[in-house]
Amino acid sequence: MTAIDPVQQLAAHVLAVIGDGPFCPPGGWTHMGAVICDASFQARRRYESTIRPRILHLQSAWPDAATVRGFQMRLATEDLAAVMNFRSPSRVATAHGVTDLLAASGVDTCDDLHAWLDDQDNRAALRAVKGVGPKSVDYIANLVGRSHVAVDVHLHAFAADAGVSGLGYEQLRAVYEKTAAILGHEPGGLEHAVWRFKSQSV
Image (cartoon, rainbow, N blue to C red; front, side):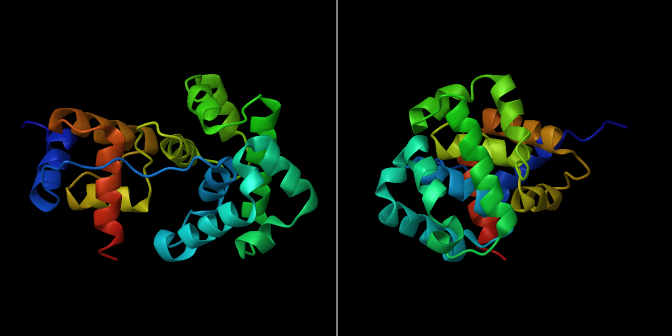
């Protein structure tokens, strides 16, 4: 009996329910405070109604936080939970932890972060920050213009709908990446198309 290829299963499901594109890449930010807060606060929250408005407000309220150093200076004297209107000590702590790591690593701008993420040791250091998992690292990469698959609950659900289940994070990410390749899409573009499709259906 021939094993069913999960990449072919997922590709067939993409074509059947989303189509063949083109798929736009996920949006990002040029403001490092926005990047850090988006990644730190977005998990398990409705993005368009809960997170995005708060990120837009942050950029307006703290324009000088467009660099890591500027954001770090704001964090030293002001209350991130207040400006984000988001009372979650653990997520605020994650934002502080990511900021301190990036500052200590000489990362100041989105371009710096884009290049810094080339190094797997740097990705591992980011993973060591409490509250940052593998999905968060890939998500941060997308926020600064890279093209990755950040596997969240929506991507898990979409894969399960296609009959692809029981895979760990790295395995499922690889399936999505290979699916993107055979369908002729950027990984980040396919990821965002799937995320948008599933987030609008719940």
